[in-house]
Amino acid sequence: MKRVWGSVCVVLCLALVTAACGTSGSAGEAIVIKAGIGLNEDHPQGQALNRFKEIVEEKSGGRIQVRPYFSAQLGDDLKMTEALQAGVQEVTIPSTSPLVGIVPEFGIFDLPFVFDEEEEADAVLDGPLGQKILDKLPEHGLVGLTYWENGYRNLTNSRRPVKRAEDFRGLKIRTMQTDVHLDAFKALGSNPTPMPFSEVFTALESGTVDGQENPLATIVSNKFYEVQEYLSLTEHVYTPFVFLVSKSFWDRLSPEDQQLIREAAIEAGKYERELNRKANAEALEELKKQGIKINEVSPEEREKMKQIIQPVIEKYRKKLGEDLVKELFEEVEKARNR
Ligand code: KDG
Image 1 (cartoon, helix red, strand yellow):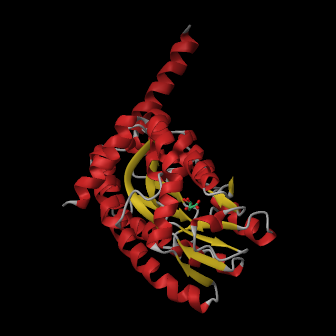
Image 2: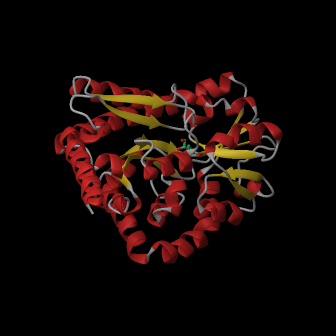
Image 3: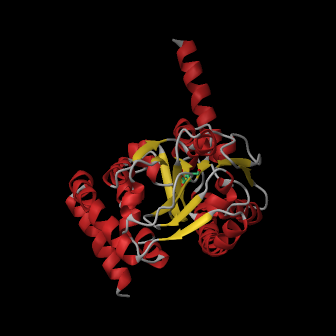
């Protein structure tokens, strides 16, 4: 019996020491944040992660250190998200799309043609609806601090120019791992293949898939133009990033350190949105220089795509929740009429 009480005391003392010193486990030792992303360091997201590091280390006087890892060095989005849930990594910033297996409601941001302007997306994501969905993360061992910007997605492929809705037919297109995109591209007559972002370049290079869709800054940063012949300016969906923190790490932080990290994520996120919009605006010039053939999509053809995809929107209105999808479109309307 004595031995049992002895080990209980040891555990209790350890818990008290950890609680007193925060997550480091011993007084004064630095708190280390391992932060992994799938995109490259030169991508706006990579530059903003470095900005997050600067802010946190400056504001904490070096007591909290951020170790950034780029280009999926720590694994793809889902592997890094699982690492946060297991408490072996502290931060990752994936697109919301691959998270639908954890929080299905993120799927509302996969619905095509929802946001006409980035500013509408900012208002909805930073408003009550965006927060309502972040609030569903803690029960899964994750804390969502804020949204960053991945941006409007455009199609690239190696087979043919895509200018009209019917041009999608028969194309093997890699999509993110979200059923909304699978159903949308099937409705357009293509053959979608979901896969992690870290596998896309090789799949394009080997011809496993004909094409993929991503914002222009990503197409440049990951040099997809080296293995793709055509770019179509479809801007068919706006994808957010979500700044995720491991809940087991977060809960061990003092309220002051939680506030410091939250404010740094929000400040770096504002910087990331600015950089991303600038990078997307400049990307077209770079892509022209790299020789990819660029196809505009007329408003009439975009309208045709919207009509073809409408049954998918209806299907997910039911699947994701009528009230949630109604709230999304109400929030968009509000932002549009500001
Ligand atoms: O880590 C990069 C991913 O977040 C990724 O989502 C980028 O848009 C992307 C994609 O196509 O997977």
